[in-house]
Length: 112
Image (cartoon, rainbow, N blue to C red):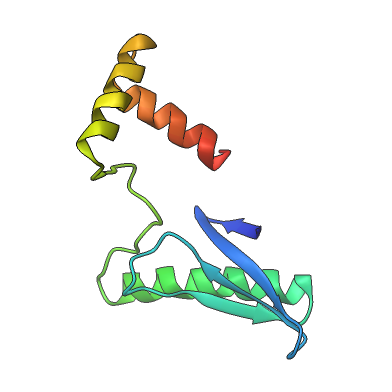
């Protein structure tokens, strides 16, 4: 996946061969919020990405809303009880809390 980053926002980039344009969409936002952009060149794509994020942040400020960031750092998961138990055992085997262990596993899996 090709991606771009700006002001804490990450976007997935794709190329539309039929239209001959690059386009992108900011990831990690709630389904009710969408930020997309496009460009015929990488420079245009980058500029439109920056403009789209800047517009979104300014529009939120103008309307008194808080601009949503892609993630808060709080994560609640629902998993099968046997997965929960196995994860707890793995965490304890590593001398960590389940939260510490899961954060490390997720970080490694996301390649951050």
